Image (cartoon, rainbow, N blue to C red; front, top):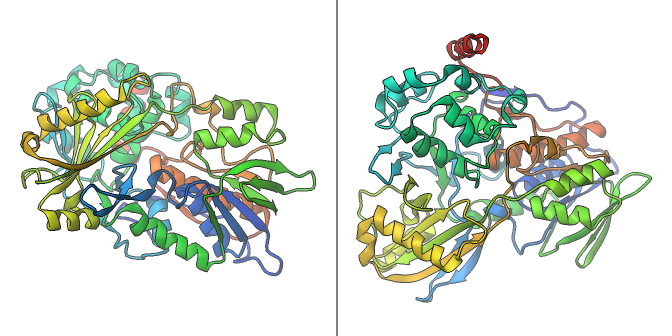
Length: 512
């Protein structure tokens, strides 16, 4: 994967550890615990190099937090329920490289024409007309945005804003991790409209309220999606539900490589052996392995570590147990008997509409939803509410979310609900203020046990699904390097501010 993966000529290639191309002779046995993006990325590279891989997944199907499952609707239709909308940004180089294993042209993805944001007071922003290359994208946004005016620049604290102009990883965590995102934005002096409409929308995509999110994570996000990348803020979506579009084909690819896929098999504990390797005790299965990849979510990792008294040392175990999940989120999917107006956006990010964070009209891009809509004359509409209070009344919150849809798209008030599914989850990592030091790295106290997932500290400018894929590849590379086998090359957006002009401004205000 050494070809340039996108349009950004300054994307950085991180060379793979060198070595022979494949294992020859007696290949090591590796257990991958977790069948989400990180686990499948690790399993893919290890199996491609000839390792004997067993993948354990507690759910009945692959995909982890981007998975899905079949449901039967009230009208008898079969459908796929998922955990909700995910944006596949064009700077997700490593995730896209994983998906290219089963579709070199990424035909399973489709681009949306715009990324609109709407505030409850009527202000709106969109990114289709904003240039993609920094610093012109920032200048274009200011020129086109009704929520950010040129005069607002004069009121900003440029010294405080300096770190946003030249984000360096991991140094940004040393500078800003001890500060909360909301406090940092207030110190910078961003205009209220821009802060609520842009930064709040983006920060909540990390499933956290800005009051609890690390300012370093906010700055990293600003770099990855805006000032550090020429890929732009437009994104792709899946043409079919996640299982059919992504994970069923990738699972078949892994099976063809000889991977033993044990879905519906939760791992109870991991026992490192004094002579190297580790034993896996799972529901209905026991295995002895030369190495283990723990590709779990926060609760899964904490649980396995708590049940595995010999795993890690005291300090590492304590850090894992201090990991926390973000507040709960709600996905409401509605099968309606009529569609929203044709001019409505396929995807709309919102602010100022109570707890409603975005609205998706799935039948505008997803084949399964489109076929149901064509057959019935209806529409499949999905609502997201991130970072909800843990003590909220769930039934009341579901009703409020529907009421906010009626504010955003008033014509939906008259639609009959054919079926509705509500999904509550509380299993995404919380990137809280000051929490970076506690996040595990890929390496553990045991050289034969590595960790992967979006909770992992990679010291690379990656986030969300791309962090999961990148950490999976890094975990595989760490093991392959020990065995003298070539690893997986990686790509990232630039690891420092890409614009010479913005770097100069950052240096100037930093000395002021």
